[in-house]
Image (cartoon, rainbow, N blue to C red; front, side, top):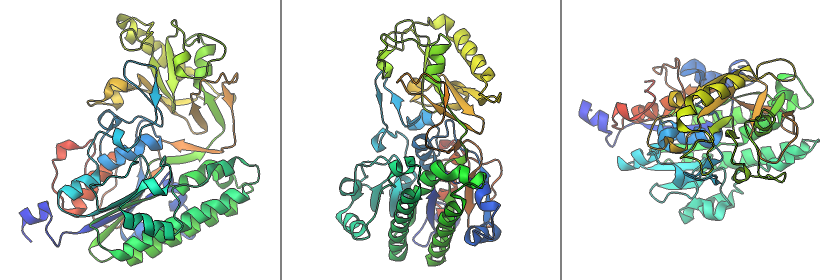
Length: 448
């Protein structure tokens, strides 16, 4: 095949199967090769290493960035909850809120088929790809799957969009663990069905249940707790499923596996709007405050999850109290206080505090947070408006996201994973598929 054909991708161009394992830390896999032999085999025969997530390391922001190769300033999605322009109203970003071009759209534009399954922030399903079932935040299978063939197939397989996370709030985790296994089993059966169909050039599917298990059992793993064996058994099953899927792939398909962020034990939830109120940064119009719209005219800052801070700026916020000429000074003051904040055990809450111009660029930075706190391990950054009373607390979850220690496995020994992050995955997949693109389009670079 000539160079021109190779770059554009001809009929015989190679294919890629991407399998997402939401929230799986690299060290969990790399430190237990005897427990997870299939992941170990990919690492040995191909390439595997830890990679960095994005700012902020939250799934609703991570998956749009991973699937576009672009930062939230380009995707327009900064987290599970985003702020409307020129208002205190907030919304939950969905698929149509992602403003950058998705990886599978580039593949379809190259006249090659893409099957997309259970990727977070993709509802409603696109009708411009071969088939798609939306993931996290979808209301149910009936509306989340397109075309009818996919919906009917998944219904027959008892497919589930997500685990019932409410079960994880129970003290006895047995029912939650059973539900997690059932969800994982159904997802595997669906992936296996379409791996066997082998009628796509790009398969892009995500196991989301890993994130759910980590949220409620990760401390048991790291500290040899009550559910340590159940945690490991869940991941042994995942490893088995990965091995089976790998064996089903044709020779012209490269398997890529990645998580969107790492994980660590949760020691303290940090209720930042309560902290802002305690420190005189935030006040409310009444004692019954329950949402962002309730903040008072004299508030200087507020927070949204995870660890995103906004200066209440004149001319940008409806009741902005900080003059534009004081913006830099006020932001520096808030940053310094965040950097100095210590938890109950004296450990610094924030590993670092990132200014928006250092993390975001693009056409959608008008809703970007002014600061983003990246927590030290152990601190989960919350931002509710319900008047928690306590700054530091702990709920039913015992695991939390981390910026570091996401994982990337590429079943190709020519891949080089060094100082890599989520932005590198999209161009890497396009290179593996020999689909043409402008290298300046991405915030990352190909690892091939």
